[in-house]
Length: 220
Picture (cartoon, rainbow, N blue to C red):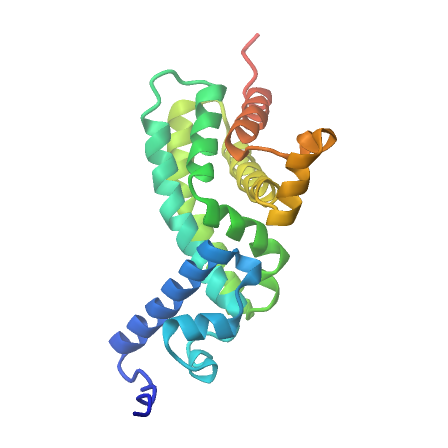
C-alpha cells in the first residue's frame, strides 16, 4: 500500500498547526541530539513530511531554531520573574541564584542561546532577525520589573547588561558542560583535566553574584 501523499495546509489554521508540528519536531530532535546535529531533513522526517514541503513553511533550519529560541525567551523570563519575586532575602547572591537555577533547568534553551549569535541569526532573512530581536526585547520587560523590586539601585542599563551576561555565560557553560561522549570520558580518565568538568549552575551563580555585587555597591 502506498504512503498517502502529503497534503499542503490551505487555511491559516492548518498552516499554524503544520508550523507547530515542525517546531515540535525540531524541539524534540534538539533535546535528543543537540542543535548542531539536527538537519532540515531530520526535522522533516520527524514531522512526517518531505523536505520540499517543509520549505514552504520555513526557509532554513536556522529559522526554525531561531523561532524556538524566541519561544524559549518567552517561557524563561516569566519563570525567572516569578523566582525573583519569591525571594525572601534580597541581595546579589539570591538574584544570581534565581538566574542560574532557571537557566540550568533549561538545557536546550542554553544550547539555543549559544547557537543563536553564532549560527541561527546568520542564515535567515532580515525580517526573521528583526522579529527575533523584538520578541526577546519584549520578553525582558517582566525581568526588568522583578529586578527593580529586588535591587532598587540597579539601573535599567545594568539590568540589561546582567541579563545579557547571564544568557551568554549560560550558553557557553552549557556547551562546555556537555561535551561529546569520547571527550567526556577523556576528562574523567585524566585527573589533570578535572578543571574541564564544570557544572553550569554553581559556576554561573558565583560569577553572577560577583557581577551584581559590582553593579550595586553599598552606599558610603
